[in-house]
Image 1 (tube, helix red, strand yellow):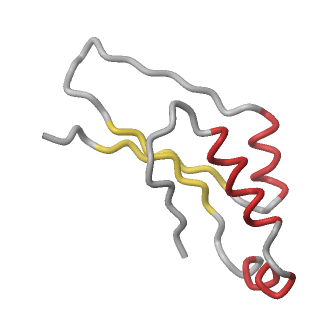
Image 2 (tube, one colour; image 1 turned 45 degrees about the vertical axis):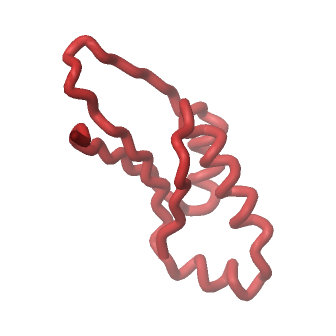
Length: 83
């Protein structure tokens, strides 16, 4: 199962917290099924062709702890620039 945030956000923290809220609100039976899944929070970044372009963001310790508490991991995926 993949959940995807279909809009750009300046940083991943708000999206992580939104998904954690959604997961915590699942009915007990769904939460039990989720425990059998691999839970990966994949942060996608689109690269730029401009060598001078730079962007930074940080994951807070609180956001990482929320993911860890659910038994999840973080993956960072860098996509090539789109023409």
